[in-house]
Length: 100
Image (cartoon, rainbow, N blue to C red; front, side):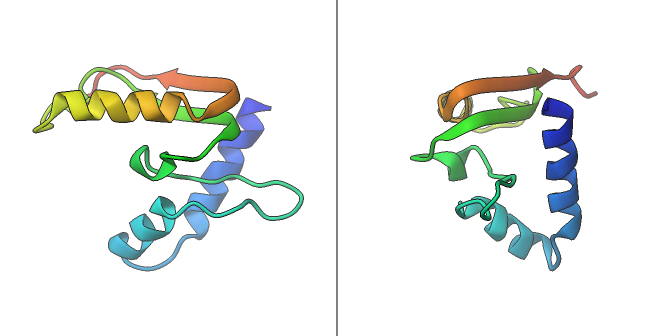
């Protein structure tokens, strides 16, 4: 099921059109999933106040979250906590090696 969810998320991202700014605006705005299910791709900040049965955090590693150039590391840690606590039933985290 996780692999299927990740493929659905990739298809959703591939369908987004427009400028980077307009894509980010769409990702930041939570919408109810279409009837019959679906995948929502959100920023950690955009997920505040929401709850989902399953949350997937695809790239959690030191240097990415918190970002190595973050001006406020504690705020990034709080946002990661927010993202993790949005999961009602299941949290899936994909730890990746730190990027150079």
